[in-house]
Image 1 (cartoon, rainbow, N blue to C red):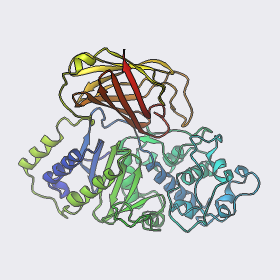
Image 2: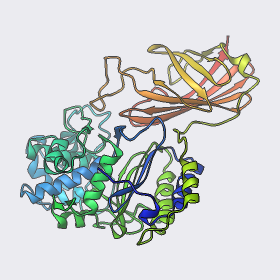
Image 3: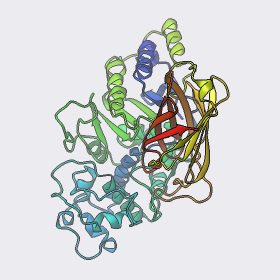
Image 4: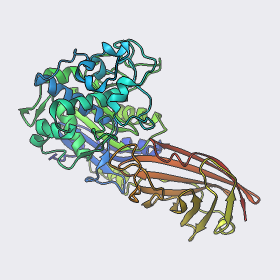
Length: 492
């Protein structure tokens, strides 16, 4: 689908690409994949093992931008107007009187996130229908069309509107209108909400090349390989600064305005942005784009590093013509990208305390995690297992010391195809687990969930005498909830 060229053919020095990736490494950005394209041709494609070109990655809130484009397609078909009031389309979802602030809210205001305000978390709501929840949960609101504020549930309502007006799922509609012609997103999926709607604000699962094709289509304002597939005017507005989205006075590379469920970024660019730094960033002036997958949840600065460094090293340095090939620069780039691996926690190579600790059982005081006992069993200085007992029974988490060991996270019941819906079939998430000796008697274990759902957990154990003090901290959307808090335990 995409021709591959060298950085020099794209007008970029291989040294600059090497510098960019080196900065990501140096700053601890937890990367999964990186694509760079110029004029629709790939000049950099890298994956951090175990991720690879055909891996179908959760794109989180990049999904909102698909919804924004789908609304434009519906407008083009004459099925809606952006200045229509959203309540007029969903009378069956409203019980009695809707709050006054929602009565005048338009589709356009929802596209720009200038809404009256969203409801509480749907993950803990008793209402399985997120559209019904949006219009019936009583809450403090403001006049729509005033402040920009991130309203993820509003995007979900727009997704449900797409599905109501088309009689198709979001993905099926996008395939019919765009992707079948493009030959992309053929193996993509979208997770569902509890009532069966597509999870349109968070759950597109596809390859990075799929995302690149979507970015290229939008950056070409609806043209794919010379054929117009969509209205140009809508996409030009959708990718422009329709509203200001600054909430604080500090500078941000990606708070340069907001269009129709699309962010504006520095360098006169626009972006589809998803939690954890799932990014598709486009610069139409230079027909330049990059795509990332990662898990940087809990570290907001990483987005500034990823986008800012690209702006400095790639965008600003991109020449209008090809550069002379440079074998030495290509060798530097090859060296930097050799053996890229998923981030693992790093520490001392070993500890004299390991042999004393291995196999010893610790009995816990009552704690938020419900863990009653645990032990570390080291096979050698490089691998081992964390064994523990909680409300579900005995569990085992294999780990590598200063490197990842891949397996299944042993907690049952987490959501699969339907968000916020516990599973009962024994489904387990794929994980990657590393452990590091921070000090002689202090350990950190780092668990990464790398499945349809992404999240991470850091657990620090500090040993003193016969006692151990542990702190569990998770960053994940509505799972790993059993793994946050502190405990004290005594060796038996």
